[in-house]
Image (cartoon, rainbow, N blue to C red):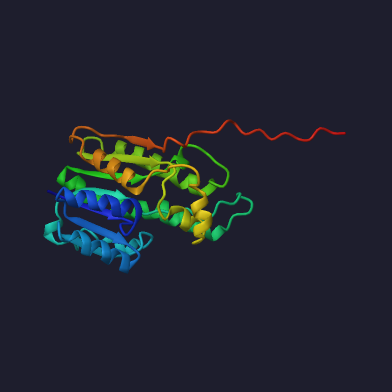
Length: 254
């Protein structure tokens, strides 16, 4: 059974998915920035399967470039790359947003995903098998106030995934985008700079998705027969839906 490489594996969707793949017997290659949190996941899951951890930032192209070459033989072949690392920062209007936040989202959600994919893809093509699973968002499909650059980065994930499918036709490698809606993880806490009260208010009075809900969907997609490719899957909690069109109306002149 081949290995599963997971970025952003120290928490949220990444950590929950790692647990499911470990239960199924897949060796794990876990990547994240936080060494202490990553070590916790390693200690928990290495009782079930071999676990190789790498403390790195997906924005570091040089660190990712030799990832596959330095993997021990126990982690070959590579069955799945789960591009999970990503974040949203701020919810301000575009004319008020912090450019540094925009840069961080672009560098992580777009460039980081590109670097990870490019590092792993040649090995999958060589073995004529593998699965790239990219975490998008409903924000890449549907606009909302304050979504500006975050939504733009997730729209990139969707179109990049489609173009990968076109490039990989006939090469045995599958590509899927999973687009979750409201999900209670550290996402909102990160978005609001660690403000726990503000983050909790996002989910007040409703039942959001959980990290486990999304992880189970990731696992289901990965376990389809090799000839089946789930191109895109969007999921929301039942309490979330689309809003009516917004209309700005000027006050009538007196």
